Amino acid sequence: MYRRIGLISFTGALAAGLLFGTAAEAGSITGNITYDDQVPKLRPINMDADPTCSGKHSSPVYPEILVLGDGNALANVFVQVKNAPAGEYPAPKAAAVIDQNGCLYQPHVLGVVVGQEVRFKNSDGILHNVHGRPKVNREFNIGMPPTLKEKGVTLNKPEPVFPVKCDVHPWMRSYVAVMTHPFFATTDKSGSFAIGNLPDGSYEVEAWHEKLGTRTAKVTVSGGAATVDFSFKRPAKK
Image (cartoon, rainbow, N blue to C red; front, side):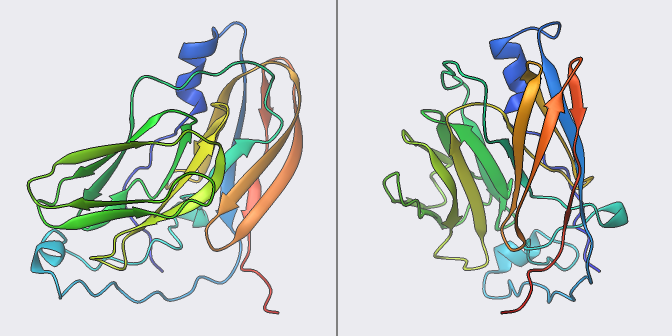
């Protein structure tokens, strides 16, 4: 079983509580996401073609299509509130960052608010390129030679999760969602998430995984808190 070590930070709504409200006014939706199915045996990524990539890792690196923590906690799940509270949610001034480090994109899944800069860093000091494949926003393909340490793009239209890849290193892939609001989060290796700054009310919550599809649930925030958990299985073969 492959269990990648490392922490993927909560994104979006945890920070939004500081921007759009106070703790006294805000509630939260928290939960845990698990994988409840047979764990496939994944083959290590072959990085031998680029010694710089392989040299950054002391142990085998596995595809990030299924990253599990203790108890089959599921990482890299993008969780959002589908019926967000009405309001104006300006883009954060701080850029959201995806780092190319060890010939992997970190984080693997990222959410941003419309108009927020996504800054791509090159910590490897080798040739990369960042090839975003959105369908609503304009496609971008940024060459990043060793001398270019970072480059930003701004996505000005809301869009569901879309892939970003590196044409130089074909195993490198990440995903970006462009939201009209900050009520979203990405699970870490504990499988947990927290979406804050929500007033009491009824919400539809969606959890998305790149290979396992989506799950939805309705939840009511009452007294400032609500909990909802999700379980994923492999899609049935057609």
